Length: 207
Image 1 (spheres, rainbow, N blue to C red):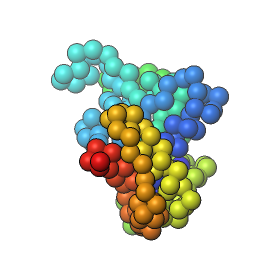
Image 2 (tube, rainbow, N blue to C red):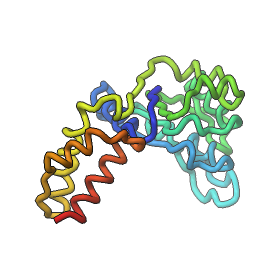
Image 3 (cartoon, helix red, strand yellow):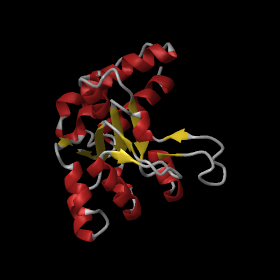
């Protein structure tokens, strides 16, 4: 379970975990839990059989099956509605998925990495997140600190983005000492994403 504010790089950490793991040769499959309509949740994650519902013209594997042997990244897990949480919990307990319209479950072997910018303990207390799912996900927890708490990273990150976008837009832009000081003093509410977008804008607009 990766926890941190928006823009701290949780997806990057998830991809790094996959790349450095024994599963690196298998797929890394990402799911944005906030973007899946509740009606399509089971089909997206678990797949469906042909004719299971209107529009199911062919058999389809779900995200769990697509990630077989690799990593399934459940981004924004804190946004998952309660009805979906119970279905996900069942899979994490049995490591079996049942395609919509199927009668025989399929075994899956995946590593699940979840990420959230919410305090899940608070969501559990409020009754908006299942405690049993929370404890199932909370096997190993990585807390990613905000950029304002790791100011030593600001300038190296800025320089990295400057190099990347400088090559992309064929612009040679350097940071003045004054600009570096401004970057160091900023609180970065949008974290690394805010820094990247700012540097990209500077490369595009500055002489």
